[in-house]
Image (tube, rainbow, N blue to C red; front, side, top):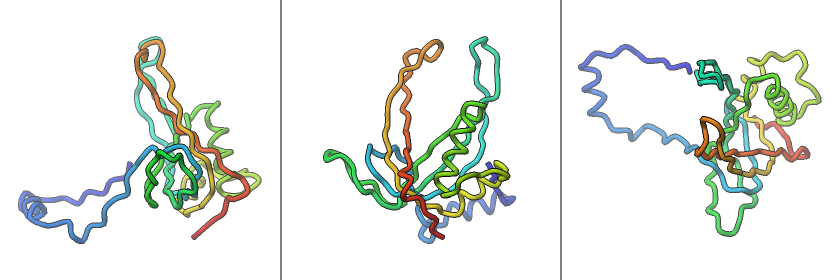
Length: 171
């Protein structure tokens, strides 16, 4: 993650504590939206790694491509669900493995409305996410139970299915 911190003295910190946030815009919330049909737009994408313990008990680097989308419009959700505010952020991740990379590639081709991303680097594709590509999709959430060392844990998976006829670019 790229963070730019300006050097501060203790006096600067004291001054910061005495300021209001009146001129600071509130950040959008990250949520797990209810199952439904939405219009989303791309916000950003990037690789992130973390050390995890493998089946042999050894530490290994697990890498994921994390994609962030903003809700542009909620078309349809269940009757018992609350509407999702426009601008709300939704995340999707792809394991950065030989099995996971093709899913990210396909996602990019559908969102960007191109037949192929041949020749584009992973960095190019991640950068393209900043261009607010809009697309219609359905979102479904499911739960899976962990096994082995993760037995007892419950994982929630958000699945985004793009409705191909509606992929567009909005600048």
